[in-house]
Image: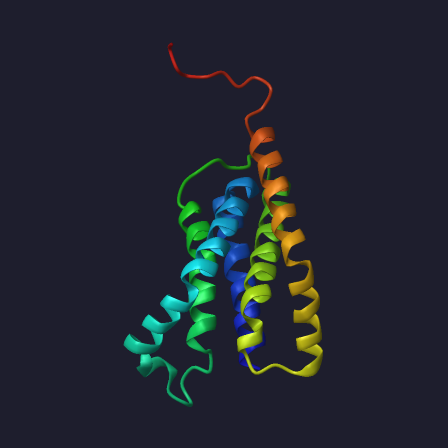
Length: 165
């Protein structure tokens, strides 16, 4: 049950924050990919630090999220959340809505693809996790391609360099 609450909470927070800030998907998508790489490289070490220094939060009855899952969620989302502070924006509300939905969905897929195996999940959820994990490389490549296209399109046809060389 805690897994569903965490997943819904992540989706809602990411969607609302991306929609309110109206950030472009391209920058946020690349931030998610960077976070995925960081989580893969430093997830085990970070989970050890969390288990060692934040053991009070993982006592039975308080939080049932394993330290490995916590580390994966934090490391995956941190770069994209930092990029929400500044960067290119959408001018139209519809573009911001679509971008926010895509950002929250992709973030959820990346987090779930890496960490749901650490939750105590049912057989149906395990089957869904295996499917996501099987498509994980394609999801990552697709996000990179869409992000780069969004960044290129965001410059617009009338973009002029500000350098005075």
